Length: 179
Image 1 (cartoon, helix red, strand yellow):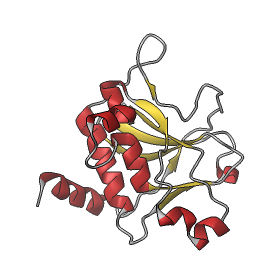
Image 2: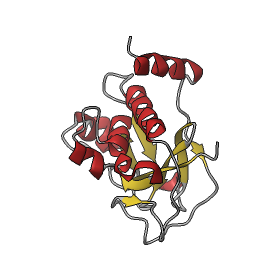
Image 3: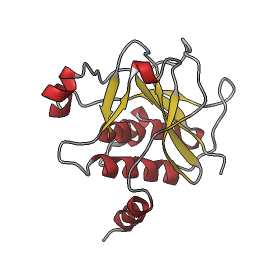
Image 4: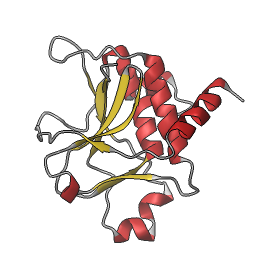
């Protein structure tokens, strides 16, 4: 068993399921877009997260999402997030991964695997893919709209389309946990 697999098993035993926790009501800002934003000075506040913690969080979210055959979805409905709310996805040591609903006109739903890929570029990411993901921000942390795999059948399933979901409208943020 690899070290990361053992760590993931322990993490899963400690938390049987991920329950997003709402944070205080947020504000919708025109400057918060789906584009990659690294929290670098002087315009932003570097988060001082460790790349190892960012990698762990992505691996955990990916593993959690793959626990079901079709993949597990993370959903932020417009009615539940009227103020561009942020929900905690997972926290590990220096890192808190947040999901922010940036389009309060749609019901957004994405695969946890796509959230993980948005964070780290994918399990076998090239250097270019890592640079295009939040992990490319290194210890500064950052934000990026979920980059989803539009060819994944989950996004065209009868249930998904009947609910009126869209994979657009969720931003992932990597910030310092304060730990």
